[in-house]
View (tube, rainbow, N blue to C red):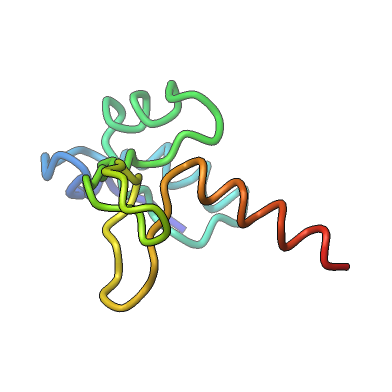
Length: 102
């Protein structure tokens, strides 16, 4: 099969890049089914990230009142309406109180 250079668009930076005939031949030889999605620059950036590092989620911190003692506290999530929120001390005491009931 004769391969010809193709123009593809990077999914990360939206730039066009050339998928050469030689690269297509390599993909065919390895039985790769999908064509590349990223240009060489974006592929390199993605490969250089530490293992296990995914897209960073924005950390949410919410100031609220503890449902048990009423003390102002900061929690690492957005509280859900109708669900109790506890300060660190009350959370720990409830956690250990539940463990002893086995």
